[in-house]
Length: 205
Image 1 (cartoon, rainbow, N blue to C red):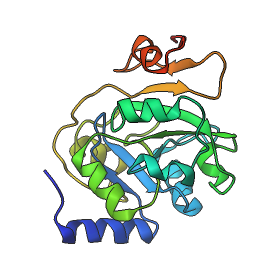
Image 2: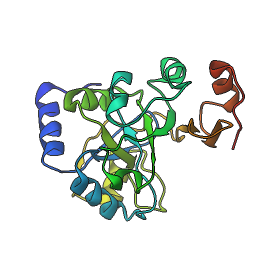
Image 3: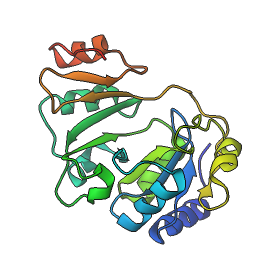
């Protein structure tokens, strides 16, 4: 299922105007704002009731966009080539231009490319990194449908119904800024699979 051109135009216009959107990903439904719109990201924190010390992950459309948000480290290219698009989030050093609110003032950023046609259509059309977190109130279950997202978040965000989530599992998170390399959150991609691609040990959570 894909968006029509008018659908994408409306979504891009909403994001450009600072609105939040809810859309399906390859894991759960996501709540998103333009990563470089600090006011929109603040609105995301407020709507989700997310504590401000917790950073927001970033989604991009293609690996070539990584330098808009992060500085690649050794091993990044291999992981991206093997697992993106997909359920792998990679932590890298942030670029200075990325708004502090996205990283909660930290020096790293979590990035991934989702493997879902809706999400990729949006990311390619807007051609900007999106700050994306799960579409639920903090501490509540992640939304697996548009209706579940609406029941928690109300009418404020633009909610895009792409059917049930493809998978209720969260993405695996690997931190490339640590030595030794470490999985910070387990998910569909195991530490063993990551280690095989990187050809070096990866510690499991």
